[in-house]
Image (cartoon, rainbow, N blue to C red):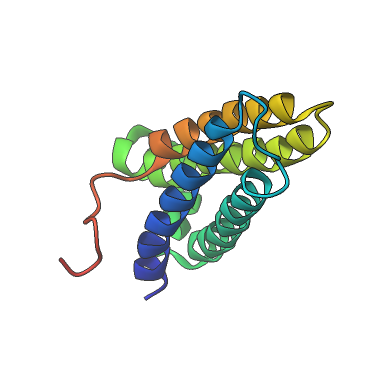
Length: 145
């Protein structure tokens, strides 16, 4: 059930990332106030990402796949499927969370509206790129289907 929840939540994270990116891009010319839309959208994206991270950490701790891999890391590293879920997926996702979190701080500290939006757009795009690279696309799009 935890895996299904983690799998479904990815769509919320990706949707909020796209909304945040669009909001940031719309304000790059400096015409929009950062605090009204882009900041809120980035905050929602980051919060959803942190929730997904917590689900992933719990899943990582209880998963038979990761528990088995921890018993013999050398064998786990030789198996691309196991290595992906034990090392690559968590690393890319953690980097995505870090980039999104730092983006919120850097964008908020921008000297003007255009810079805030530009920093937000760049950071969200980088975080989204890392997240898209780490999503296990081989899993069903919706659990059970």
